[in-house]
Image (cartoon, rainbow, N blue to C red; front, side, top):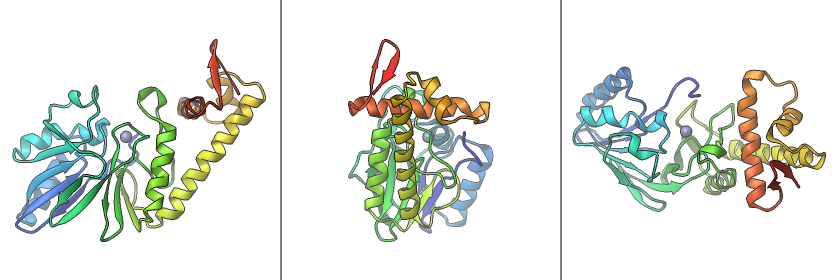
Length: 253
Ligand SMILES: [Zn+2]
């Protein structure tokens, strides 16, 4: 599910401290590339800011801590998830300011893809490091059964959109140079899908499977589990908003 792999971002000052955004997975080549990049600038790894606790972003913390004993590791706490990594996490929260070399990054809570998800905002360049908030060319999985929340996710998209960023730097895929267009399209897509889920409920489809089959008719069977997870996320959002109801194993309007 990581596509071409992960992006991590190194913000370094010559002869000074460096900040890494996301820890990756501890891949040997990543550790080597990081060491070379730091060496080139005579910089030292001071801080690692982790966007969220999913393994492809956080599990590399252990290898980084061994290779860079002075580094500090920050993320928003996610009890039950963070403990699986042997890292002395320091807490970050919405509104905090993190140092990145000579620059400051504002911490922006962007829950939805995961409950602990953070983005990092550089006001001067209107650049946001967005973790798994968006991936160019595809949509982002919201696992309702594993801490994902579509209502939160849509609010996070709206919040980032309101900042009118110039560039988004995601953890997967290329940089986003037209964030307003992408974020608007993401929101539109989810609203369209929600209308489809409502229509499916209206025509009597009462299970996740039946709703997914009616909306994603003809989809490659290998993709159906992801489609059902998406339907589940929409239903959960509608249930919280009291626009859909679930009883006796059946969904209804
Ligand atoms: Zn993730």
